[in-house]
Image 1 (cartoon, rainbow, N blue to C red):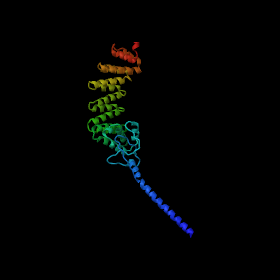
Image 2 (cartoon, one colour):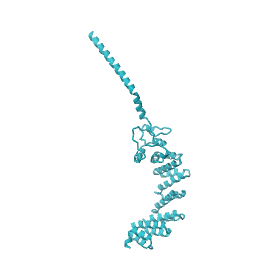
Image 3 (cartoon, one colour):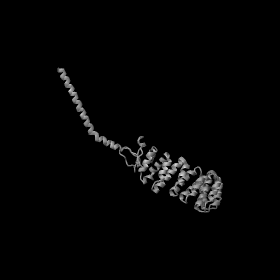
Image 4 (cartoon, one colour):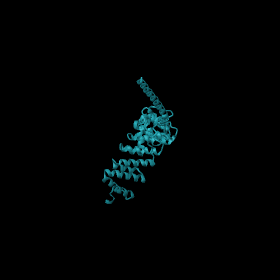
Length: 320
């Protein structure tokens, strides 16, 4: 009988301890609930990326498309690169999905859109979907932002598919945005087809960027066909652009044909600064390939400051 009483007492003691422990744990969990909620709220907090750069989203979050666009979210303690860290920004952006890029662009101010971050984001979008990127930049409301990003998209697309980029830009409305983008594409065209690049330049309204493209393309063409390049330069209307083109052709031609370049310059460029510059360019390049012939040509000049300068350039003044 005593044994039964002891057993009953032990059983009651165990039940009491169990109930007390369970009650203590529930109170402990309830007292910690606000902290857990605070942590969850902190982890899900979205940061304003107008002046900062987000880290990549997780694989699951990157598939979520929000409307209106929001910048990617990161933990509050993440260290973010800024505009002062272009390399870090470039590496970060190169990992983003198309949804991330669109979201981030949608969160930027006009000032940041035209900065390094905005241009890099557009380039990344072109890598992923050039048509979508081109459509987005061409519909931007701010004219200055649109001009900058249309140009960035056009150049990036040309590196991927030059004919497609040209088709897109040529279909844009006739305005400065189109003309500047087309001029920049012309430089890409000049690498492989300088004649076509010159045609693009001549179709553009008169401007510094159109003239620059024409001279650049002509310089590229000289090494392909010097005689035809001379004719193209001579066909330009009289003026500073024509003089610059003639000087460019003569100078570049001197790398391969010093005699022909020298004769072309003297016969076709009017006396003055442009002729002097052409002579100096011919002498320097011709002298690298045929020092004796270049020196003889310079010594045939009438005595003048130009002759002295050219001989100094060749290093033969003291041995005259």
